[in-house]
Image (cartoon, rainbow, N blue to C red; front, side, top):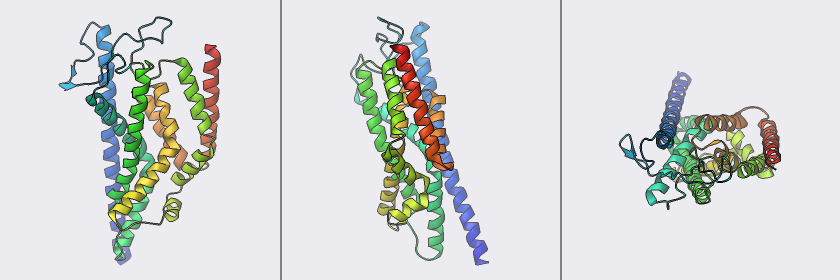
Length: 296
């Protein structure tokens, strides 16, 4: 009877954690879809003789000014490639807006791949509670994981700002330079073969192995948060280069975002994920070199 009751509690807790993670992911993707749609409207409006790029969208001031006079893209002297705010200094509101965009995007992309680890923590935590040795709630561990990706969002915003200052971004926040895009493809492909990539991926592929190698489950909230943060850092180490591909296909290209998110998940959950990693690395290097050959 006691075993049956415990199994019921475990199933209930698992359902609650899964529902919470699914809700966070869905809300994040809804925000991404809304933002992508809004930016498409803003980019299309001037071409249609409509609103100014700095106008309000649905009652919300969009601080992502998109000046029209930008070089590159369609040939020498072209003004069709548009960045976010290169012709105007970024205001604090612009940085804040970009940060929220990246932070929410990271949540939407990375929570699915972190779900096995979070579910493992929740399951073992419930079992420990039944034995009178409770762990810190799962939310602290998940919060630490998301904090690591939130920190990554800061660096992503800085990279976006640097590219924008160099007039290298299009309206979709993709690279306006074919050379830069090709070099990024090659760089990301090569990173897929590095020992650092292998080490970080191994920590993400084996949740129980990771926890055992880092002191086990934690009873204190701060310690649980730190464990989640450490796992998040390994995940950042595994996937940061792949996130750079967003600047190749477009930060606001929803299909591209989804494709990268699916690949990140596949790397971590399918057997022999390193083979997939290396195959993708070869494909990216070949694609980059092919693009460079076409340019020169």
